[in-house]
Length: 68
Image (cartoon, rainbow, N blue to C red; front, side):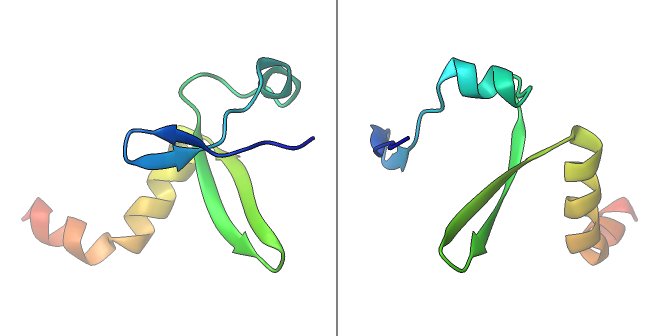
């Protein structure tokens, strides 16, 4: 399958067709982790708890300062 970038505001995006989203059980408000791989990008759906865990680990010191 070949997809093309589409203009989305000042950015560019790729639209994923509904059959693909249904096949992968991806909902409308899904969060994704985007990582660079050797030959491209990897999109991996994240659960809300997993996304929170990643953000809290990355920004733990700042979050601790804000909590004081």
